[in-house]
Amino acid sequence: MRIGLDGFPLAMPRTGIGHYTFELARSLALLSTDDDFELISPLAFDPSVMEELNLSGSPSNLSTVNPDRTRYSKRWWAIGLPLYLRRARLDLFHGTNYEGPLWNTNSTVVTIHDLSLLLHADKHEERLARRARRRLPITARSSVMIITATESVKREICEHLRVRPERVAVTPYAPRRSFRPVPLEETIETRRRLGIEDEFILFVGTIEPRKNLLTLVRAFEEILRHTPQRPQLVIVGREGWLSDDLHSFIERSGIKDRLLMTGYLPEQDLAALYSSCSLCVYPSLYEGFGLPPLEAMACGAPVITSNIPTIVETVEASARLVAPTDTRAVASAIIELLSDEGERRRLSSAGLARAAQFSWEKTARQTMDVYREALRRKKRIKLQ
View (cartoon, rainbow, N blue to C red):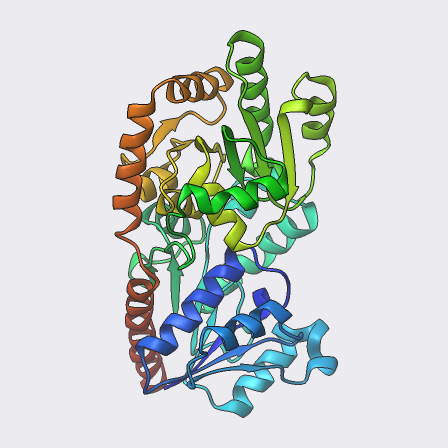
């Protein structure tokens, strides 16, 4: 088979969907050596992507393609990609980021990671929510198969986009290969360089309303105000949008001297922080899967996270689950675990075991099964 994957998420510094696209493409190529895979983008790939592919020994059956870059980059989904797919004669195209070609769709698989843009539109920029309202139903109807990471989101897709369950396949994600426990002594240089103390609480994610950081910093203020504990709170991630309320609260509160915001960090630094933090806290309001808590657990971090269905499905009983909007519950869980080293060790061990159940090889195998089913359905469509 010749299979194309949407490389658009790799034309910019990687966030969750970019990591999904990269890890899946590489794992598919390693798994299915008789098939050819193309990462296709109208924009140049981020230099870190090309560097990592070269350093990791890019499989010979995985290539990157920038077709008609200057001509069609602004009309990619409507014109550029459909024309390229017709010319390239690929057997299948996988849209890894909610989107697929607007015509020539009878060989398209699409990943819908979540329905946040529809179900929590107030937590996103209006232009993105408006686009999702217009495009997601079209994509869901026109794709041969849909992939998502959890049964919870599958149910949402079937209900809100009116898709039959047999057209939606669940393929869970996995921690990146670099996320594994780092010996404590090997984390010292990273922490010193970043100004991070020995005892710290860690959050990793984009700074935006859906990640619910305001609840975390309010809980942190309660901890500093009402207990003798003085841990450092370290927030790792890019600025997203609508973060004014968060920054205003930080300015008014008394936590600034105990708070460090690092911005985006590379994987090696993240693995060091996950491996050395006292706790990793992830109080997100909505997720399609919950990869940051799982990657934290893969490094041995004890995790506190939201009791929302998708995250519960991902972490099961391997993390401390709290209501994400309950500031006191978040604060109480942090205080309790900071005071109980035995429970932190138990959560660390349980988290390592849970994270080990996921792998990108397994995700690739399940994805190949989806491709085969999509091709069977494509043949039936042609015969009709």
